[in-house]
Image (cartoon, rainbow, N blue to C red; front, side, top):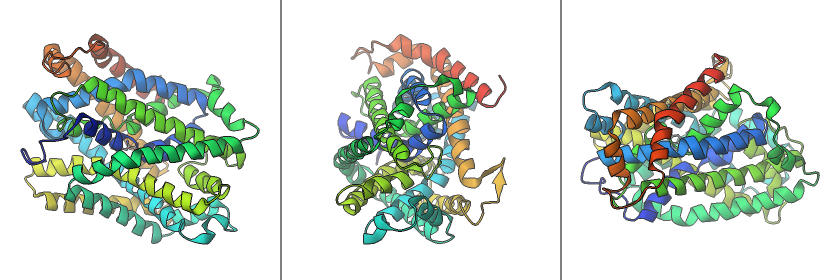
Amino acid sequence: MQQGTTRDGFSSKFGVLVAAAGSAVGLGNLWRFPYMVGENGGSAFIIIYILLMVVLCMPVMVAEFMVGRRAKRDVMGAFDVLAPRTPWKGIGVLGLTAALVILGFYCVVGGWTLAYMSNSVVPSFLSQTETYANSFQNLIAAPVQPLLWCFLFILLTALVVIGGVKNGIERYSKILMPVLFVMVMVLAVRALTLDTEMKGLKFLFQPDFSKVNGNTFLAALGQAFFSMSIGMGAMITYGSYIPKNSNLVKTSYGVMSTDLLFSLLAGLAVIPAVFAFGISPSEGPGLVFVTFPEIFSKLPLGNILSLIFFVLLGIAALTSSISLFEVLVAYLVDARRLSRRKAVGLVTCIVCVLGTLASLSMGTLKHLTIFGKNFFDCCDSLSANILLPLGGLFICLFVGWYMKPADVRDELTNGGTIRVPLFNAILFILRYATPIAILMIFASGMGWI
Ligand code: TRP
Protein backbone atom coordinates (compact mmCIF):
# COMPACT_ATOMS: atom_id res chain seq x y z
CA MET A 1 0.00 0.00 0.00
CA GLN A 2 1.43 3.35 -0.99
CA GLN A 3 2.24 5.83 1.72
CA GLY A 4 -0.04 8.81 1.72
CA THR A 5 -2.57 7.52 -0.78
CA THR A 6 -4.48 4.82 1.03
CA ARG A 7 -2.49 5.00 4.24
CA ASP A 8 -4.82 7.69 5.58
CA GLY A 9 -7.07 4.80 6.51
CA PHE A 10 -10.48 4.32 8.03
CA SER A 11 -12.58 7.39 8.61
CA SER A 12 -14.31 6.28 11.80
CA LYS A 13 -13.92 3.89 14.68
CA PHE A 14 -17.03 2.08 13.49
CA GLY A 15 -15.45 1.74 10.05
CA VAL A 16 -12.48 -0.03 11.62
CA LEU A 17 -14.72 -2.44 13.45
CA VAL A 18 -16.79 -3.24 10.38
CA ALA A 19 -13.77 -3.80 8.14
CA ALA A 20 -11.93 -5.97 10.66
CA ALA A 21 -15.11 -7.88 11.48
CA GLY A 22 -15.70 -8.23 7.73
CA SER A 23 -12.32 -9.88 7.41
CA ALA A 24 -12.92 -12.13 10.40
CA VAL A 25 -16.47 -13.22 9.59
CA GLY A 26 -16.44 -15.37 6.50
CA LEU A 27 -16.38 -18.94 5.32
CA GLY A 28 -14.39 -19.72 8.45
CA ASN A 29 -17.49 -19.19 10.55
CA LEU A 30 -20.26 -20.53 8.35
CA TRP A 31 -18.48 -23.24 6.42
CA ARG A 32 -15.40 -24.32 8.38
CA PHE A 33 -16.61 -24.02 11.99
CA PRO A 34 -19.64 -26.35 11.70
CA TYR A 35 -17.65 -29.12 10.05
CA MET A 36 -14.80 -28.76 12.53
CA VAL A 37 -17.37 -29.12 15.34
CA GLY A 38 -18.78 -32.17 13.58
CA GLU A 39 -15.41 -33.81 13.02
CA ASN A 40 -14.08 -33.09 16.49
CA GLY A 41 -16.97 -34.32 18.57
CA GLY A 42 -19.19 -31.33 19.33
CA SER A 43 -19.46 -29.41 22.56
CA ALA A 44 -16.08 -30.26 24.13
CA PHE A 45 -14.48 -28.79 21.00
CA ILE A 46 -16.66 -25.67 21.25
CA ILE A 47 -15.73 -25.06 24.90
CA ILE A 48 -12.02 -25.40 24.17
CA TYR A 49 -12.45 -23.16 21.13
CA ILE A 50 -14.16 -20.39 23.11
CA LEU A 51 -11.57 -20.52 25.90
CA LEU A 52 -8.67 -20.37 23.46
CA MET A 53 -10.28 -17.52 21.59
CA VAL A 54 -11.06 -15.32 24.60
CA VAL A 55 -7.93 -15.94 26.63
CA LEU A 56 -5.13 -16.69 24.19
CA CYS A 57 -6.14 -15.33 20.79
CA MET A 58 -7.73 -12.00 21.63
CA PRO A 59 -4.36 -10.58 22.84
CA VAL A 60 -2.76 -11.72 19.57
CA MET A 61 -5.26 -9.59 17.68
CA VAL A 62 -4.42 -6.64 19.96
CA ALA A 63 -0.72 -7.27 19.27
CA GLU A 64 -1.24 -7.31 15.49
CA PHE A 65 -3.28 -4.09 15.50
CA MET A 66 -0.64 -2.52 17.72
CA VAL A 67 2.29 -3.47 15.47
CA GLY A 68 0.40 -2.25 12.39
CA ARG A 69 -0.64 1.08 13.83
CA ARG A 70 2.80 1.77 15.29
CA ALA A 71 4.65 0.97 12.04
CA LYS A 72 2.01 2.14 9.55
CA ARG A 73 3.27 -0.40 7.04
CA ASP A 74 2.42 -3.76 5.44
CA VAL A 75 3.44 -7.12 7.00
CA MET A 76 7.02 -7.08 5.72
CA GLY A 77 7.52 -3.32 6.10
CA ALA A 78 6.20 -3.27 9.65
CA PHE A 79 9.12 -5.35 10.91
CA ASP A 80 11.56 -3.30 8.84
CA VAL A 81 10.37 -0.20 10.68
CA LEU A 82 10.09 -1.64 14.19
CA ALA A 83 13.07 -4.03 14.06
CA PRO A 84 15.39 -2.98 11.22
CA ARG A 85 17.94 -5.52 10.03
CA THR A 86 16.75 -8.36 12.25
CA PRO A 87 15.36 -11.80 11.41
CA TRP A 88 11.93 -10.69 12.66
CA LYS A 89 11.19 -9.91 9.04
CA GLY A 90 10.68 -13.66 8.72
CA ILE A 91 7.22 -13.13 10.21
CA GLY A 92 6.42 -11.21 7.04
CA VAL A 93 7.59 -14.08 4.83
CA LEU A 94 5.48 -16.48 6.86
CA GLY A 95 2.49 -14.16 6.51
CA LEU A 96 2.78 -13.86 2.75
CA THR A 97 3.09 -17.63 2.40
CA ALA A 98 0.03 -18.14 4.58
CA ALA A 99 -1.97 -15.63 2.52
CA LEU A 100 -1.24 -17.61 -0.66
CA VAL A 101 -1.94 -20.99 0.87
CA ILE A 102 -5.25 -19.82 2.36
CA LEU A 103 -6.35 -18.11 -0.84
CA GLY A 104 -5.60 -21.34 -2.70
CA PHE A 105 -8.54 -23.15 -1.13
CA TYR A 106 -10.62 -20.19 0.07
CA CYS A 107 -11.43 -19.12 -3.48
CA VAL A 108 -12.50 -22.66 -4.35
CA VAL A 109 -15.07 -22.60 -1.55
CA GLY A 110 -15.99 -19.05 -2.58
CA GLY A 111 -16.66 -20.52 -6.03
CA TRP A 112 -18.94 -23.22 -4.61
CA THR A 113 -20.89 -20.44 -2.88
CA LEU A 114 -21.37 -18.66 -6.20
CA ALA A 115 -22.44 -21.92 -7.82
CA TYR A 116 -25.09 -22.47 -5.15
CA MET A 117 -26.18 -18.88 -5.55
CA SER A 118 -26.87 -19.42 -9.22
CA ASN A 119 -28.42 -22.86 -8.60
CA SER A 120 -30.94 -21.27 -6.23
CA VAL A 121 -32.48 -19.50 -9.21
CA VAL A 122 -33.36 -22.85 -10.83
CA PRO A 123 -36.89 -23.66 -9.60
CA SER A 124 -36.18 -27.39 -9.25
CA PHE A 125 -33.02 -26.81 -7.16
CA LEU A 126 -34.68 -27.78 -3.88
CA SER A 127 -36.92 -30.48 -5.26
CA GLN A 128 -34.35 -32.55 -7.11
CA THR A 129 -34.52 -36.32 -6.94
CA GLU A 130 -30.83 -36.71 -6.18
CA THR A 131 -29.69 -36.27 -2.58
CA TYR A 132 -28.07 -32.94 -1.74
CA ALA A 133 -24.91 -34.78 -0.80
CA ASN A 134 -24.74 -36.33 -4.27
CA SER A 135 -25.33 -33.11 -6.12
CA PHE A 136 -22.66 -31.37 -4.03
CA GLN A 137 -20.23 -34.18 -4.77
CA ASN A 138 -21.01 -33.98 -8.48
CA LEU A 139 -20.46 -30.24 -8.50
CA ILE A 140 -17.08 -30.22 -6.78
CA ALA A 141 -15.70 -33.24 -8.59
CA ALA A 142 -16.56 -31.90 -12.05
CA PRO A 143 -13.46 -30.81 -13.97
CA VAL A 144 -14.61 -27.49 -15.44
CA GLN A 145 -17.64 -25.96 -13.74
CA PRO A 146 -16.20 -25.39 -10.24
CA LEU A 147 -13.05 -23.99 -11.82
CA LEU A 148 -15.02 -21.32 -13.63
CA TRP A 149 -16.83 -20.34 -10.43
CA CYS A 150 -13.52 -20.24 -8.61
CA PHE A 151 -12.05 -17.93 -11.27
CA LEU A 152 -15.11 -15.71 -11.04
CA PHE A 153 -14.68 -15.43 -7.29
CA ILE A 154 -10.98 -14.52 -7.71
CA LEU A 155 -11.94 -11.95 -10.33
CA LEU A 156 -14.51 -10.34 -8.04
CA THR A 157 -11.94 -10.14 -5.25
CA ALA A 158 -9.39 -8.62 -7.63
CA LEU A 159 -11.88 -6.02 -8.87
CA VAL A 160 -12.68 -4.85 -5.37
CA VAL A 161 -9.02 -4.69 -4.41
CA ILE A 162 -8.23 -2.62 -7.52
CA GLY A 163 -11.24 -0.37 -7.06
CA GLY A 164 -10.61 0.42 -3.41
CA VAL A 165 -12.01 -1.32 -0.43
CA LYS A 166 -13.30 1.47 1.70
CA ASN A 167 -16.05 3.04 -0.34
CA GLY A 168 -17.26 -0.20 -1.79
CA ILE A 169 -17.17 -3.23 0.41
CA GLU A 170 -16.91 -1.37 3.70
CA ARG A 171 -20.02 0.67 3.02
CA TYR A 172 -22.02 -2.39 2.01
CA SER A 173 -20.70 -4.52 4.86
CA LYS A 174 -22.37 -2.19 7.34
CA ILE A 175 -25.76 -3.19 5.93
CA LEU A 176 -25.12 -6.72 4.72
CA MET A 177 -23.46 -8.13 7.82
CA PRO A 178 -26.52 -7.50 10.01
CA VAL A 179 -28.75 -8.99 7.30
CA LEU A 180 -26.58 -12.11 7.18
CA PHE A 181 -26.86 -12.31 10.95
CA VAL A 182 -30.66 -12.26 10.86
CA MET A 183 -30.65 -14.83 8.07
CA VAL A 184 -28.49 -17.29 10.01
CA MET A 185 -30.75 -16.72 13.00
CA VAL A 186 -33.81 -17.73 10.95
CA LEU A 187 -31.98 -20.86 9.80
CA ALA A 188 -30.99 -21.69 13.37
CA VAL A 189 -34.59 -21.40 14.57
CA ARG A 190 -35.84 -23.60 11.73
CA ALA A 191 -33.10 -26.15 12.33
CA LEU A 192 -33.90 -26.28 16.04
CA THR A 193 -37.57 -26.90 15.38
CA LEU A 194 -36.63 -29.74 13.01
CA ASP A 195 -34.47 -31.39 15.64
CA THR A 196 -37.38 -32.97 17.50
CA GLU A 197 -35.28 -35.59 19.24
CA MET A 198 -32.81 -32.95 20.47
CA LYS A 199 -29.88 -35.03 19.25
CA GLY A 200 -28.22 -31.98 17.76
CA LEU A 201 -28.62 -29.96 20.94
CA LYS A 202 -27.12 -32.77 22.96
CA PHE A 203 -24.19 -32.91 20.56
CA LEU A 204 -23.75 -29.16 20.97
CA PHE A 205 -24.27 -28.75 24.68
CA GLN A 206 -23.45 -32.03 26.44
CA PRO A 207 -19.68 -32.07 26.53
CA ASP A 208 -17.96 -35.41 26.21
CA PHE A 209 -14.35 -34.84 27.19
CA SER A 210 -13.42 -38.48 26.80
CA LYS A 211 -12.66 -38.03 23.11
CA VAL A 212 -10.54 -34.89 23.62
CA ASN A 213 -6.88 -35.27 22.69
CA GLY A 214 -4.00 -33.15 21.42
CA ASN A 215 -5.56 -33.04 17.99
CA THR A 216 -8.77 -31.53 19.36
CA PHE A 217 -6.74 -28.67 20.84
CA LEU A 218 -4.75 -28.21 17.64
CA ALA A 219 -7.94 -28.13 15.58
CA ALA A 220 -9.58 -25.64 17.97
CA LEU A 221 -6.51 -23.42 18.01
CA GLY A 222 -6.21 -23.47 14.23
CA GLN A 223 -9.91 -22.72 13.86
CA ALA A 224 -9.65 -19.79 16.33
CA PHE A 225 -6.71 -18.27 14.43
CA PHE A 226 -8.34 -18.84 11.06
CA SER A 227 -11.68 -17.45 12.11
CA MET A 228 -10.22 -14.31 13.71
CA SER A 229 -7.91 -13.70 10.70
CA ILE A 230 -4.86 -13.62 12.97
CA GLY A 231 -1.40 -15.12 12.74
CA MET A 232 -0.41 -13.88 9.30
CA GLY A 233 -0.46 -10.10 9.37
CA ALA A 234 -3.88 -9.32 7.91
CA MET A 235 -4.65 -7.45 11.11
CA ILE A 236 -1.22 -5.78 10.96
CA THR A 237 -2.18 -4.42 7.54
CA TYR A 238 -5.59 -3.30 8.83
CA GLY A 239 -4.00 -1.95 12.01
CA SER A 240 -1.93 0.40 9.90
CA TYR A 241 -5.16 2.15 8.81
CA ILE A 242 -6.60 2.52 12.33
CA PRO A 243 -6.87 6.12 13.58
CA LYS A 244 -4.77 7.14 16.57
CA ASN A 245 -7.78 7.72 18.81
CA SER A 246 -9.24 4.19 18.44
CA ASN A 247 -9.08 1.92 21.44
CA LEU A 248 -7.28 -1.15 20.09
CA VAL A 249 -8.27 -3.43 22.96
CA LYS A 250 -11.95 -2.53 22.69
CA THR A 251 -11.84 -2.95 18.91
CA SER A 252 -10.33 -6.41 19.31
CA TYR A 253 -13.04 -7.37 21.78
CA GLY A 254 -15.67 -6.15 19.35
CA VAL A 255 -14.22 -8.15 16.44
CA MET A 256 -13.78 -11.27 18.53
CA SER A 257 -17.33 -11.15 19.93
CA THR A 258 -18.87 -10.62 16.50
CA ASP A 259 -16.82 -13.46 15.10
CA LEU A 260 -17.70 -15.81 17.93
CA LEU A 261 -21.38 -14.97 17.69
CA PHE A 262 -21.47 -15.82 13.98
CA SER A 263 -19.67 -19.12 14.55
CA LEU A 264 -21.94 -20.23 17.37
CA LEU A 265 -25.03 -19.28 15.45
CA ALA A 266 -23.76 -21.19 12.41
CA GLY A 267 -23.21 -24.23 14.64
CA LEU A 268 -26.72 -23.85 15.96
CA ALA A 269 -28.10 -23.73 12.43
CA VAL A 270 -26.12 -26.63 10.99
CA ILE A 271 -25.71 -29.25 13.69
CA PRO A 272 -29.39 -29.78 14.71
CA ALA A 273 -30.28 -29.99 11.01
CA VAL A 274 -27.53 -32.54 10.46
CA PHE A 275 -29.12 -34.86 13.00
CA ALA A 276 -32.66 -34.16 11.87
CA PHE A 277 -31.79 -35.20 8.30
CA GLY A 278 -29.56 -38.10 9.27
CA ILE A 279 -26.44 -36.56 7.74
CA SER A 280 -23.13 -37.59 9.29
CA PRO A 281 -21.70 -34.73 11.38
CA SER A 282 -18.24 -35.65 10.14
CA GLU A 283 -19.30 -35.20 6.51
CA GLY A 284 -16.39 -32.74 6.12
CA PRO A 285 -16.05 -29.65 3.95
CA GLY A 286 -19.41 -30.22 2.25
CA LEU A 287 -21.40 -30.05 5.48
CA VAL A 288 -23.13 -26.67 5.03
CA PHE A 289 -23.65 -27.18 1.32
CA VAL A 290 -25.56 -30.35 2.09
CA THR A 291 -27.51 -29.27 5.18
CA PHE A 292 -28.60 -25.75 4.27
CA PRO A 293 -30.45 -26.78 1.09
CA GLU A 294 -32.23 -29.39 3.23
CA ILE A 295 -33.42 -26.66 5.62
CA PHE A 296 -34.39 -24.37 2.76
CA SER A 297 -36.49 -27.12 1.21
CA LYS A 298 -38.48 -27.19 4.46
CA LEU A 299 -39.12 -23.44 4.49
CA PRO A 300 -41.70 -21.43 2.57
CA LEU A 301 -40.09 -19.50 -0.32
CA GLY A 302 -37.08 -21.79 0.03
CA ASN A 303 -35.53 -20.82 -3.31
CA ILE A 304 -35.62 -17.13 -2.54
CA LEU A 305 -34.23 -17.60 0.96
CA SER A 306 -31.54 -19.85 -0.46
CA LEU A 307 -30.62 -17.22 -3.02
CA ILE A 308 -30.41 -14.48 -0.38
CA PHE A 309 -28.39 -16.70 1.91
CA PHE A 310 -25.78 -17.68 -0.68
CA VAL A 311 -25.50 -14.08 -1.90
CA LEU A 312 -24.77 -12.98 1.66
CA LEU A 313 -22.38 -15.87 2.23
CA GLY A 314 -20.59 -14.91 -0.98
CA ILE A 315 -20.25 -11.34 0.27
CA ALA A 316 -18.97 -12.48 3.66
CA ALA A 317 -16.43 -14.64 1.83
CA LEU A 318 -15.47 -11.70 -0.37
CA THR A 319 -14.81 -9.30 2.53
CA SER A 320 -12.48 -11.96 3.91
CA SER A 321 -10.68 -12.88 0.71
CA ILE A 322 -10.09 -9.18 0.08
CA SER A 323 -8.13 -8.90 3.32
CA LEU A 324 -5.96 -11.84 2.26
CA PHE A 325 -5.42 -10.43 -1.23
CA GLU A 326 -4.62 -7.02 0.21
CA VAL A 327 -1.77 -8.43 2.31
CA LEU A 328 -0.03 -9.66 -0.87
CA VAL A 329 -0.84 -6.61 -2.97
CA ALA A 330 0.31 -4.19 -0.24
CA TYR A 331 3.63 -6.02 -0.10
CA LEU A 332 4.18 -5.97 -3.88
CA VAL A 333 3.33 -2.28 -4.08
CA ASP A 334 5.39 -1.28 -1.06
CA ALA A 335 8.46 -3.43 -1.27
CA ARG A 336 8.57 -4.43 -4.94
CA ARG A 337 7.46 -1.04 -6.24
CA LEU A 338 4.85 -2.57 -8.56
CA SER A 339 1.90 -0.44 -9.59
CA ARG A 340 -1.31 -1.43 -7.82
CA ARG A 341 -2.78 -2.77 -11.06
CA LYS A 342 0.27 -4.91 -11.85
CA ALA A 343 0.36 -6.19 -8.29
CA VAL A 344 -3.29 -7.20 -8.44
CA GLY A 345 -2.68 -8.86 -11.84
CA LEU A 346 0.25 -10.87 -10.56
CA VAL A 347 -1.55 -12.01 -7.40
CA THR A 348 -4.62 -12.94 -9.48
CA CYS A 349 -2.51 -15.18 -11.76
CA ILE A 350 -0.78 -16.97 -8.89
CA VAL A 351 -4.04 -17.49 -7.00
CA CYS A 352 -5.71 -18.85 -10.16
CA VAL A 353 -3.00 -21.50 -10.45
CA LEU A 354 -3.33 -22.49 -6.78
CA GLY A 355 -7.12 -22.42 -7.01
CA THR A 356 -7.03 -24.69 -10.07
CA LEU A 357 -4.92 -27.25 -8.23
CA ALA A 358 -7.15 -27.10 -5.14
CA SER A 359 -10.33 -27.36 -7.18
CA LEU A 360 -9.11 -30.24 -9.35
CA SER A 361 -7.89 -32.08 -6.27
CA MET A 362 -11.57 -32.68 -5.42
CA GLY A 363 -12.03 -34.77 -8.57
CA THR A 364 -9.59 -35.20 -11.44
CA LEU A 365 -6.46 -34.86 -9.29
CA LYS A 366 -7.87 -36.67 -6.27
CA HIS A 367 -5.08 -39.20 -6.30
CA LEU A 368 -2.31 -36.64 -6.13
CA THR A 369 -1.74 -36.62 -2.39
CA ILE A 370 0.79 -34.97 -0.11
CA PHE A 371 1.18 -36.63 3.31
CA GLY A 372 -1.98 -38.59 2.55
CA LYS A 373 -4.06 -35.50 1.88
CA ASN A 374 -5.23 -34.00 -1.38
CA PHE A 375 -4.05 -30.51 -2.32
CA PHE A 376 -7.18 -28.79 -0.98
CA ASP A 377 -7.00 -30.44 2.46
CA CYS A 378 -3.27 -29.88 2.52
CA CYS A 379 -3.67 -26.11 2.04
CA ASP A 380 -6.43 -26.07 4.64
CA SER A 381 -4.54 -27.86 7.39
CA LEU A 382 -1.12 -26.42 6.53
CA SER A 383 -2.47 -22.91 7.01
CA ALA A 384 -4.70 -23.40 10.04
CA ASN A 385 -2.64 -25.96 11.92
CA ILE A 386 0.89 -24.81 11.12
CA LEU A 387 1.38 -21.43 9.45
CA LEU A 388 -1.11 -19.37 11.49
CA PRO A 389 -0.17 -20.65 14.96
CA LEU A 390 3.51 -20.32 14.04
CA GLY A 391 3.00 -16.75 12.86
CA GLY A 392 0.98 -16.04 16.01
CA LEU A 393 3.77 -17.46 18.15
CA PHE A 394 6.37 -15.16 16.62
CA ILE A 395 4.09 -12.11 16.81
CA CYS A 396 3.62 -12.78 20.55
CA LEU A 397 7.35 -13.16 21.07
CA PHE A 398 8.02 -9.99 19.11
CA VAL A 399 5.58 -7.85 21.07
CA GLY A 400 6.19 -9.55 24.43
CA TRP A 401 9.96 -9.75 24.39
CA TYR A 402 11.45 -7.63 21.62
CA MET A 403 9.39 -4.46 21.88
CA LYS A 404 9.85 -2.27 24.93
CA PRO A 405 6.87 -2.61 27.32
CA ALA A 406 6.80 1.19 27.55
CA ASP A 407 6.26 1.40 23.77
CA VAL A 408 3.56 -1.25 23.87
CA ARG A 409 1.83 0.62 26.68
CA ASP A 410 2.18 3.91 24.85
CA GLU A 411 0.53 2.51 21.71
CA LEU A 412 -2.28 0.72 23.54
CA THR A 413 -3.12 3.70 25.75
CA ASN A 414 -2.96 6.09 22.78
CA GLY A 415 -0.05 7.97 24.31
CA GLY A 416 -1.43 7.76 27.84
CA THR A 417 -4.79 9.30 26.99
CA ILE A 418 -6.96 6.24 27.67
CA ARG A 419 -6.90 3.60 30.37
CA VAL A 420 -6.29 -0.01 29.43
CA PRO A 421 -7.27 -1.93 32.56
CA LEU A 422 -6.07 -5.31 31.34
CA PHE A 423 -2.68 -4.14 30.09
CA ASN A 424 -0.61 -6.32 32.42
CA ALA A 425 -2.73 -9.36 31.76
CA ILE A 426 -2.41 -8.86 28.01
CA LEU A 427 1.36 -8.52 28.24
CA PHE A 428 1.58 -11.61 30.42
CA ILE A 429 -0.48 -13.62 27.96
CA LEU A 430 1.65 -12.45 25.04
CA ARG A 431 4.88 -13.22 26.87
CA TYR A 432 4.09 -16.56 28.42
CA ALA A 433 0.62 -18.01 28.07
CA THR A 434 0.04 -17.96 24.31
CA PRO A 435 3.59 -18.98 23.26
CA ILE A 436 3.71 -21.86 25.73
CA ALA A 437 0.21 -22.98 24.82
CA ILE A 438 0.97 -22.86 21.10
CA LEU A 439 4.16 -24.90 21.57
CA MET A 440 2.40 -27.48 23.73
CA ILE A 441 -0.56 -27.77 21.41
CA PHE A 442 1.80 -28.15 18.47
CA ALA A 443 3.77 -30.83 20.22
CA SER A 444 0.74 -32.82 21.25
CA GLY A 445 -1.04 -32.35 17.93
CA MET A 446 2.04 -33.78 16.23
CA GLY A 447 2.02 -36.61 18.73
CA TRP A 448 5.31 -35.59 20.40
CA ILE A 449 3.89 -35.38 23.92
N1 TRP B 1 -11.29 -15.13 8.90
C1 TRP B 1 -11.78 -15.42 7.61
C2 TRP B 1 -12.90 -16.41 7.73
O1 TRP B 1 -13.28 -16.77 8.80
C3 TRP B 1 -10.70 -15.90 6.67
C4 TRP B 1 -9.54 -14.97 6.63
C5 TRP B 1 -9.50 -13.74 6.11
C6 TRP B 1 -8.29 -15.20 7.21
N2 TRP B 1 -8.28 -13.18 6.33
C7 TRP B 1 -7.53 -14.04 7.00
C8 TRP B 1 -7.77 -16.28 7.89
C9 TRP B 1 -6.25 -13.97 7.49
C10 TRP B 1 -6.48 -16.18 8.38
C11 TRP B 1 -5.73 -15.04 8.19
O2 TRP B 1 -13.44 -16.84 6.77
